[in-house]
Image 1 (cartoon, rainbow, N blue to C red):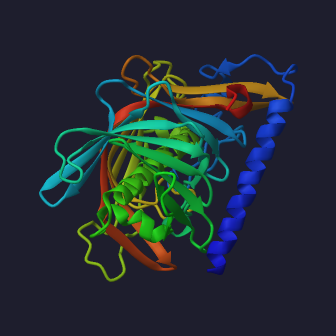
Image 2: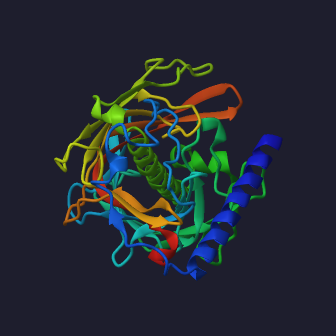
Length: 403
């Protein structure tokens, strides 16, 4: 309990720092800054001249030199296929959720690279089309709207994951409305939920709330609330994965140009559970010189191949057991010179067009791994989700974006 409390204190401190820095950035002048440049031809990008070129250790990605403390991010999804789709298998059947921005809104918030904190902005709204949930075969839309900013902690091993301690979201489904507010009334966090504004509040601790989706004898509206949370958390994890991949790209030019990065995962041996997964997986990041300039940089493409990989070290790309592919295209890296140093003012992956493909998921299966007790590793057989589809994701200096 003491360790959880200390982590919550650190998380609150990080949020406060981010807010202070965001306010400071908003009031600062940039009159002395040089024009923005998209780094493709600078000497720092040449192999062998990269001052931060490091050994092939993608299991512990360090924040790239020049990275700012706080960025805003936006996720742009397509209006038609390939829409980002999360599929859950249940025995011989499957159910899926197609995820896109709600009309007139965008998915976004802020990201702090050094802490891994993703804050979903109030107003972020998702239109989720559900197929085969709760015995309903025909597609049904679920609207999820963040009503107060929600902060998730990403890029950490399973033992260091934290449940949000503040913020709220609302869900609309077939005319029903309910609200979920995150609380800090228990050491590990929890939620307070209300069906309609005049209903009696219902409280759950974090672990119980996350398991409501597949819990027997649970009201459907509470299962929907749990599903909405799972979707919001999944999107936050993809923000951390995209940014962490950018850090790995920026700090491993030579290795990428020499054939790529392959890393063995942490040994996965669950406690007291028979595991169908191999004990040791791996992940490989490869590079394609899409820009045809002979160097790793803007405009290029990259591909992650995860083979039942579990990353349980510092700076973990994902706390889940992961298998499948994630491709990144249209790499963007914008810099400015400030006080004699280059700072990264923007980065991301963007192809644009009607069907954005900056980040493309191909059968990326993730199995939730928990470490509620130090040293006791378990996996949740009900929390196995597969992602397919694509979107663009961009990070920009927080003050410049106005978020």
